Length: 65
Image 1: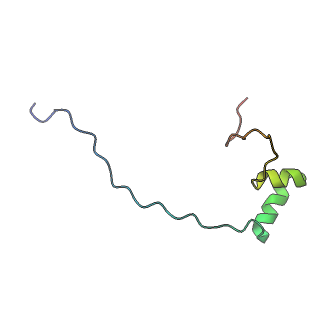
Image 2 (image 1 turned 90 degrees about the vertical axis):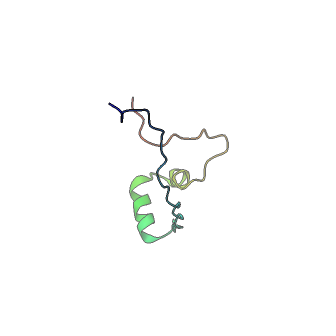
Image 3 (image 1 turned 90 degrees about the horizontal axis):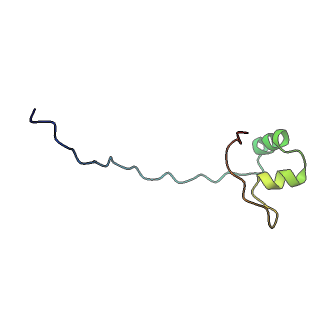
């Protein structure tokens, strides 16, 4: 059949990247969430992105073991 040749890979339209909205980590909703997931002050700081010197970078997502 004449219409079954190779087709080039077309690129779809790419939208503009949305600007990330700044989030207040000290808002009441954020603090309530942190209250349930953090166990102590060092854990709280670790979850907020303040890592200890020499701390290996954590992988995102759940570990499957």
